[in-house]
Image 1 (cartoon, rainbow, N blue to C red):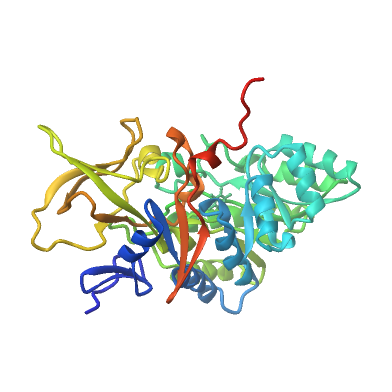
Image 2 (image 1 turned 60 degrees about the vertical axis):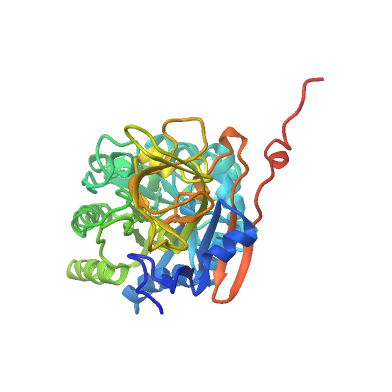
Length: 426
Ligand SMILES: *Cc1c(COP(=O)(O)O)cnc(C)c1O
C-alpha cells in the first residue's frame, strides 16, 4: 500500500511500514551506508527544475542554480546536464562548477566581498556576468579587468527596499541590509559603470531574500527594478538581461509557497504588461530546486527522560544540520519504520555536539526506541553545504537515488580525513 507523498516531498512516501524515496526503502539505505546520511532524489530535483522551465516556456530565460544551497559535485552535474547555469558566491564555488562540467559562460558571480584574486579567476574562466554589489567593487573590478586586458560583463545588484517577509537572517532586500546598491544610487552607479573601459554593462539584478512564500514581494521588487531599467535606458545605457534572483520558499512545515510555474506565469504577465516580457530573463533559485529533494537519516542513540523535557538523542547534529541552530528553523522529523503500537512521547530531538544550540527539532511527538532510524525532512538545501567538522565529526555521506539506482556521491569522511591537512609542531 502506498500512502500519499509527505507534504512538499513529491517522491517521499510510506509504502506499507517503510518510508521510501523514489520507491527505495530508506531503512535499508541507512543500514547499508550508516548514519547520519543525506539521501537526495534525482527525480525531485528535476521535477523542481521542470516547474520553472514550464513557467518559462517560450521565453528567453537562463536558470542559474544558486549552488550554495547544495554544492555537491554530482548535484551540480545534474543541473549542468539539464542546461542550468550557476549563481556562485566565491572562487571556490567557481572551481566546483568547472570540476562538475558546468559552462563558465552561464556562471554569474554574486556576493558583497569578491577579492581581486576571485575576480581574476572568474575573468580568466570567462564567466557570463559579475553581479556587482557596491560602487567600490565596480572600481576594483574595472582595474582587475584592465590589468588582464579584458572587459568584465557586469550587472548591478540593486536593493529594491522591499520586505520579503521572511526570517531577518535570510532577508536581503531591505535598506538596512549589506546587499546590493540603494535604489537612489542605481542610476549614478550605472553611469559610472558605463564610463569605465574595463566593464561592459549587460544586466540588472536583485535578490530580495530567501524562503519567500508570497507573490507580493516579488511583484514589488519587479516594479521597482523596471522603474530603474526605464531610467537607466533613458540615460542611454542598454540593459540586456533582467535577473530577479532566487528566494522562492518550500514547505518545511505548513508553508504554502506559490508553485514555481504559477509564480512565473504571474510575474511574466507583469513583465509583459510593462513591455519587458521579451527581454532575456535570468533567475537564481537555490532552495526551491533542492530543499525538498533531500532527507537526512539519523539513528536514535538514547532516550533521556527528564522532569521538564524528554530528550531524544540522535547521531546527527548541528554540524550536519545547522539550520535549527542558525535560524531556529523547523524541519519535520519522521520515523523510517513507524511503530503504530508505540507510545508517543514529547521529545526535543538533539545531537551529540557539546552546545545547547545543538537541537534538530523541539517538542516532537514520537514513538521511538534506541536503534530506530528517523528522517529529518527538507534537508536538500543549506544542510550538507553548510556542514562543518565541529567536534571533529566527519561529514556525513551523501547518496543520490534515481529509481532503483543508488549512487554514493560523497563517502563518509573519516576522522583522519578531517585533520589530514594539519601539521604538527617540529
Ligand atoms: C542565496 C542566493 C540565492 C538563492 O536563494 P534561495 O533562497 O536558495 O533560492 C540567489 N541569489 C543570490 C545572490 C543569493 O545570495
